[in-house]
Structure formats: structure tokens, C-alpha cells
Length: 434
Image (tube, rainbow, N blue to C red):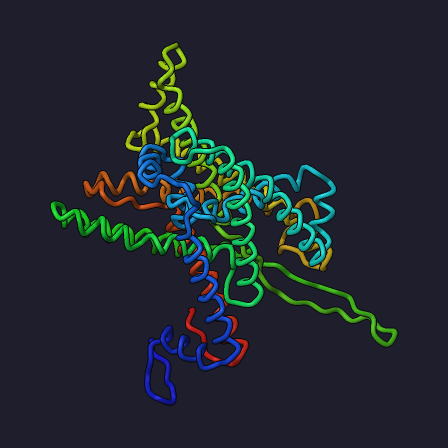
């Protein structure tokens, strides 16, 4: 659909880009965001000294867990750069705090303090990120040392401090984007890393000339999955809510009422269940690989699991599907109960039509979220096993389609577009989302 402009007719998205760059403050936000992302990609190509790249490449070919973690570093881990950990320790800290909030009353009190509480929680997440980065970095560096990728212990200590500082620097860059740019900074850093890996993915596709039809069908599957992700990310159930208040003015009581709706998203867990599921499924196979050289019964058991849990086996992807579904329900219910929607509605004079305020409203909302999460959980499980299904249908093995990458890209893209749309609408320009 086109939009009438002074210079002619342009598509809505193109016109929105023209409008955005015609506004000095919005143009500055966009350019600032692009500059920070360019700085991040530059830093991701600065390797730690003393790395044997050939040994490192061989290690990544034989270790799927490192390849999964490399997703969140945008390829920095496979280069062993100073930001090799990416923002994964920060994401881990955020998930840990979210899961611990219902357990500890002190965290619950902080989470209910509004803007000040959110600032305190963010500070706690930052402090927790440091030990997680140190622990994760130490484990990876020890693995690299055992694989002859790095040599001396002294260098390991220096590298550990460097990559931990690199993680905190990326977190700071992300917050700078959030405050002074467009979009969520941490998410955009992950997004930029995934997009940076596209050229190598396309190169792999062009090299597979023996199966051109399969590669084309593979691309079609990718486009269809992206469309489905957009559909399910935007889908929500609208719960009608009525507001009624009594206001005393001039010694008289006036009643005010209004109607709105409470949107409950079908996929409110995002990509977190996929991260949980893949981490759990990958870990046993990774451990088994390193224990398989043992000459005792431990080696026999390790060899059994190493063969059983290879990424090409149906059992591997079946476990991924089941774990994604389970974690989707678990994470959604934990986060939903933290929001205290029924309590907040009652406090603000709102109620769901036909449902009594308080506990009955909470029970009703829990039943609704369980029903709609069933669709979201099955969808996430399907998206998780799409790479396996795509390789079976097309016969293309050279290209790896990461479902986690697609979810992150679509989610971050939609969130950034919404923020840009809001900025344009606030300045009386026509947006581009419908």
C-alpha cells in the first residue's frame, strides 16, 4: 500500500525510512544505534593473543555446545575474540533472577517498587553477570587449554579477565543503545551477530550445486517459518476488562467507567524455552564425548550416549520437542504469576466481565493462559525441530537453519519496528505497521 507524499507515492516502509531520517533527533538515534553495532562487530574480530586457530576450528567442529553458545556471541567465540562470551552471561543472570523472584520475598518486594524496583533488579542482574561470566569463561578456557588451543596458565588468567570485561562492555553498549538509540540494546547486539553470520550461510548454499532444487526448497521453508513466527508472536487473546471508579468532587460522588482489554500473548515465553531445551540436550552428548576415551565401563556408557544423542538422530530432536513444550509451560506460568494481574486490576478498579475480582479472576486468567500456551508450546516445539525436518525433506546438509536464530531475529525485528513506529506516530507522521 502506498502513501501520498510531497514528492510522489512511496511504499509505507520506504516512506517511514524517509520520514525517520528527515527528523534530526530520530536520525541521530538511528545513526547512534548503527554506530554502536558497527563498533561491536569490529571488537568481535579482535582475537585474544596466542590462539591456535586450526585447533580452535577443529574443536568447534567436534563440540556442538560451543557452536550453540557461539550463536549468542555472533561468531566471536569461534574466533576467541575479547568478547567471546557475548551477552550470554547477562541473559543467564536475567533468567536466574526471574526464576528466583517468586522464591525469595525480598526479590518480590523489590519487583513491586515500580521504576525504582526495576533499577534495583537491573543492578542485581549486573552484579550476578560478573561471576557467571567468570565461571563460564573459566570453563571454556580450560576446555581450550585441554584441546591445545591455548598454552600457559598465566595466559588463561589474563584471557579470563579480558573476556569477562568484554562481556560487561557489551552489556554497557547495549544499555547505551536502549537509552540513546532505537530498540532493545542487548537484543540488537545478538541480532547483529546472527545477521553477520548470513554471508557464510549463503556461501554454503551456493557451494551445494548438486542439490539446487533442495537449496531453493530449503529457502522457501525458511521464509514460511519466519511468516509463522511473526503470526504466532503477534497472536494474543483479548480479555475484556471493565473499569469503574468513584470520584468525590465538590462534596458529591461521581462514577467513572471505561472498557478495555487485557492482551494475553500465545507465545509469551519467546526463545527462552529453546535455550533451556537445547542446553540440556546438548550437554550429555558433550560430556559423553570427553568421557568416551575412558577404558572402563564409564567409557562404554559414554560411547552409548555419544552415539545416541547425535544431532542427526530422531531421539535427539524428539527430546528437544518435549523439553521445549515443558519449558514453555514452566517459564510462562512463572512469569505470568509474577505479574499479579488480578491484584493489579482490583487495585485500579478493574474487573473481567462476568468474573468476580480477586482470587476468581486469578483462577480464570490462569485457566486462559494454560489453554493458549498449549498452542504456543506446540508451535515452539515445531519451530525447534524445523532444522531436522527441513534437512530430511530437502536433503540439504550443508546449510544449518537455526530455529533459535529465527526466533531472535523476528522478535527483535518486530520490537525495533514497533519502537520506530511509536517514534514516528509521536511526531505526527504516518507509521508503517498495520
